[in-house]
Length: 255
Picture 1 (tube, one colour):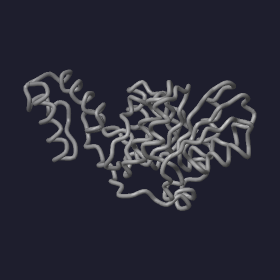
Picture 2 (picture 1 turned 90 degrees about the vertical axis):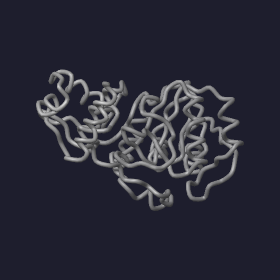
Picture 3 (picture 1 turned 120 degrees about the horizontal axis):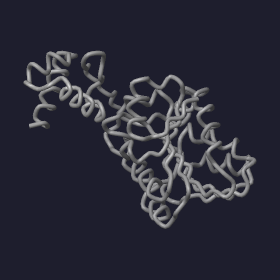
Picture 4 (picture 1 turned 180 degrees about the horizontal axis):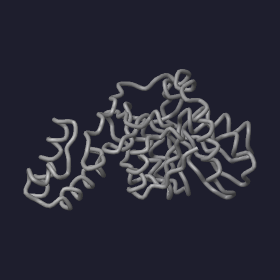
């Protein structure tokens, strides 16, 4: 009955755009405390947003169709990505073995790792490997596999098999899209599979994502938000999203 009532509440909110606690309590013949609990549970799934005295419909995530080219992605939100990369590098300690994902945000960590010795970096990203090799004294382990020119990274069974044999302290992930209901998503199966393997190989998972990634979704799921230990983003990360992320027990670092 609880599940059925919550589904009906969600339908009402989506159809009308909003609903008030007292009105919902009368409609379903339950207390306002019960309705507030229902709304809290529905908000946690990303289905709606609680508002003063009730709830409003959550905006539909923008559906992504494909991955933009590396050069085009590199110019988007560049200052925010630089701050995020610097903050992420501060989470790396001497002696760490880390995985660095492909992406225009993760690569911004590279130059800030120069003073961390010793350090081992595992990556499938050409730009990360080249920058780490030139700017730091870290040992670089480059994953083999099939080259994706679009992502400037390797993937496929060879990369996944290598990751399956690794156990590292930390992984620093990028993502194409991020929302409360679907978590991390992508538009490329090969990239998604490598990211999953990276998550499995690491004890701690750090996600680097500027605020523009929020409320977007690809059609291939990578991981639920609960699999992330910390999210590093910029100060434009929406207030409602901050609350939802922190309720999941995820450390939120905004720079």
